[in-house]
Image (cartoon, rainbow, N blue to C red):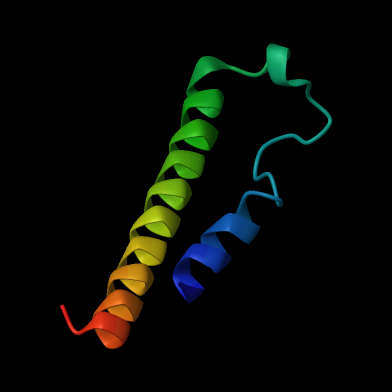
Length: 62
């Protein structure tokens, strides 16, 4: 989960020109940012799913 947090925080620090509006950005920059967000969301979902399964096993033993 620490990796997800670090990658999520990295989205706040846009590596591209921050003064450029979203609609004016090249398509490849939009694609990179959206893929980065998708990877962070997937890793967060998998991490939370793993924690819930681990907790369920600890409580119910199944």
